[in-house]
Amino acid sequence: MVDLDAAIGFVVKKGDPVDRARLSYLRTGVTPAEEILTAAEAGQADGGGWFGSQHGKVPSIDVTCFRLAQLDDLGALARPSVKRAFDWLAGRQAADGSWQEAKELAADAPEWAQPGDPEATLYLTANATFWLTVMGLDVRSSLPYGDPTPIPYADAALRGAEFIKSSLNPDGTWPSYLMTGWLGAAVMYRQDMFYEAARMQAVLGERLPSMAPADAAAMAAAMRRVGVSADDWTMIAAKRRLAETQRTDGGWNSEADVTFDVHLTLNVIRALHEITPPSQSTLL
Image (cartoon, rainbow, N blue to C red):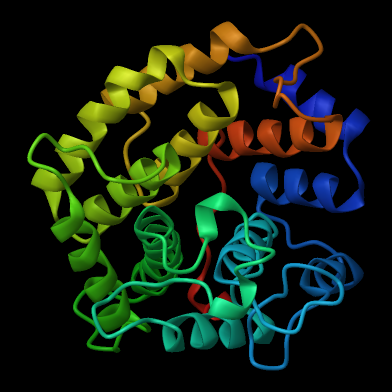
């Protein structure tokens, strides 16, 4: 079993104030202080996305999705900055339902986000669609049964899901990075494309025994965020992988520095610790 108490202690000891605020929200659902939220929003472009560097001039889809993940861990998806980010993200969708970075970012974008690269396009599409789907899920869960209120970004999320679905190979694999798989599987599950979700989860399940802890944690966190049961066999396999790779200090090895170890550990806590669902008054 994963030692969650030790994981919490690791974040408290090694994390910065934003990390500890994320931990507090994930454990108790308490929204952090305004200065923490403001710090997490720093560097946003006027149009809504976030830049990839301090001196960036063109916002990045990849970086914007990363910032949304951080703000989600702070219970901040109802913030005006996040509404602008979602509007910007939906506006960057191509006619075929996909997303890719602007050409101006080619020199600085990492391999997985290179504009014009098919593997990067599928990854960015899965990432952007995941976050649009999450927002729609949060709004839907706050409404009374049968309420006809339109779900924001539903059309963009569905078109993104169709693009992912059309990109899958017959055996359930995908022509992109491993992380595309769990983001895509989460999207398929929440968009009621259960056959495709099951095929992708089967592929992920085969890879779990050798997954790096960071990948197992990110996969489990994404699946739980869209409502996959903690008793799902994929989740059980992920928990087994995380239990066997947890260090004695409560953290996990990200194969980078301790900052990334803390982020990885927060992902584990997100995946395995239940938080209070958002109320209607906190949503867009």
